[in-house]
Image (tube, rainbow, N blue to C red):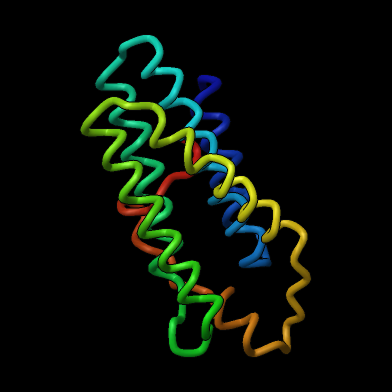
Length: 150
């Protein structure tokens, strides 16, 4: 087992055994932040394919976060998150096409702030509004799972 496959196995186990959707959301944000930072490093080095891969992964995680929102029950908060996610995906796409790191640098603080807010949020199990923002999504087939580990 190589280091990379060990990390992947650990993360897969951590995701499978995490009881809180909030924890999964924080892990997703951690993945987005890691992919964006790695993409910036690849941009600095002129590594176009690696940059593309990391930005594509960051965008996929954000898209997954957006798909779990319940816009009907989540109200204004869910709609605002949706709009932010769409903005983030637009900026990531622009960075991918242009190679301009300012698109990524511009959204990093907002992604970090959202991650920190989720990490600090107390989500009581019986709060229906919180449940609407933090609802469980059925796991995909093994071959189509989204990876937040890279």
